[in-house]
Image 1 (tube, rainbow, N blue to C red):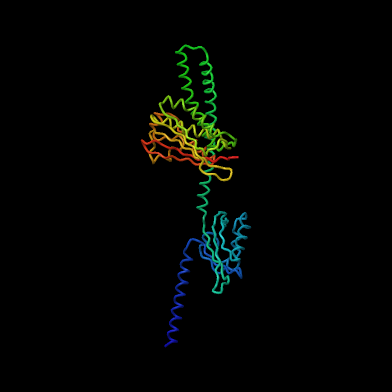
Image 2: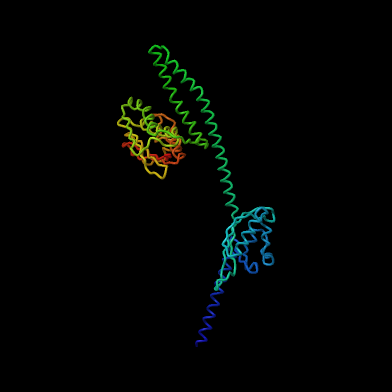
Length: 387
């Protein structure tokens, strides 16, 4: 009885093995990917599925007699690389590679191939199992995306250069108008003439500011804006910015407050001009959108590593506030919270976009905390060297 039972077990084992082999054969012969098995000690092809015929446009039978026959189909420019990777796979190394093949009709296809070493029960390398996939469509799409990206970048550069050139063309006569207006205001004028000239000056200042913003943005957009590292008095620089805006704040009936924490040193190394530009943009924006109350600038040293410190700047206002869903939008070029803001408050919508990019170029971050009707606080961090 025991022998009979042993014979039944052996029979069931053989049936299971045949079923397993049949399932493997059905799977291997119907998938679109090329599946191959190589015996490394003999460098002989043990199995390759019919997908090879479809992808390579050749019959797989030749590989059983000459395993390296597929190398002849590899694009000449890729052949050396492919041989090197294939040789590594014969040495128990899991490999991945992409390469081109040339079909008999002259067409080129891209393949991605992966191979894995397989060991027997004694841990000896017994076969190399690999799979190769036709990725020609993927490569074509990648090429189209890359070509479109290159074209878009070229168009963007051309647009930036055009905007920059046109802005310079506008700025030259505008500077002449403003300069002559200043000179005329210094001469003897009737009160009526002085009033009219002051109106001309005020009207010319606004487009000049907008043109300068467009110029700055086009430089940033074209990657041509660079920062300069100079030693400057941080406290004095901030005081001068605030003084320039204090008259405007006073005329609007607003308080302009400044708090510089004791941890902030006077002397630092960085780009003074760009820092002034960011602070001026944020304070100017806060004053523009605040009808009553105050605007406050606060500066403190946040972290310090060796001779480099990160400074935290915040500009708080009691203005109209910004809806939470618009917090990211306001840092985009030519964007304001809504179109009525542009009509009511003016501006090109570039101040925050320029500030955001300048902060990034200087190695910092910028963000906003705000609620509608409760005002806004714009924060930004900038690292400066201390010595």
